[in-house]
Image 1 (cartoon, rainbow, N blue to C red):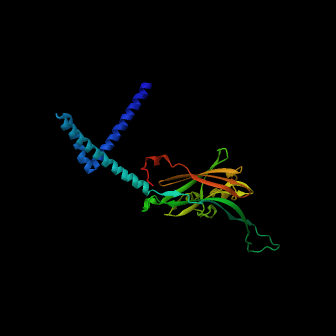
Image 2: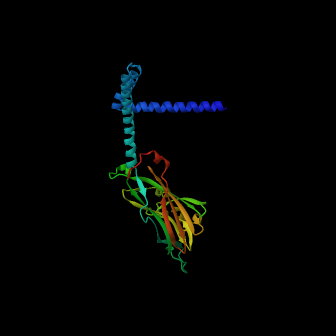
Image 3: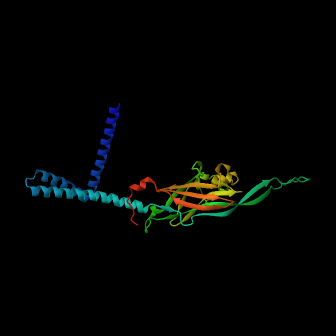
Length: 296
């Protein structure tokens, strides 16, 4: 059994090496200068191995190595330029100073009751009575701004189809819930047309330099609750997003086309007020390690 596993692993490694070597040769043949000096490196190397004089042998092998180095550099430079272009053209999202903030927002609740009956019936039906009430809630928001990595942005620098996921944890690090984030400037789900879905407002686009806000949570009588589009269907205060205690932690992850950013937020809720607000960006995804490093 061990021999079969070892043989399978060996053949897999060999096939992977051959495939990558063919890719390398293809990259050399795609560049005219590499296509010219590549065979020369082989010619000089063979000449140096067959030559009689020590000086001739050393000179030929040195020229062969130089030709090989030029060919390899041309392949590397072409891929490096493409990676730098990818790195600089991709969109960038950040939380500006004071991007984590609180305010008080007013929600309007509408109820409809049947019209009172009259002693003498009429042919015209009485319209129902519409009652409105207003309530205010302290809320916590995260402002996210679109930025660029290069002073000359392109169409690829625009942040597109960006959605957010908010994960809440207690003081011990235990996960309480995970919910879709709500962008503050998107329509309320209750105001959407009948032929539209809530999923249409989960992802948004950012213009260059544009800021958008995420609604995170609210306070009701000292208790903290997560807030998103689902909350409108449950009377604003949604018990499934309850965050017990006074010390809270949120992880906000935004993803989109060429975008994957995460922030950790810590805060306290005391007497219908958010205190000690802290926001920090965590390490970028692992694929960034393969990109050329930026020199600030």
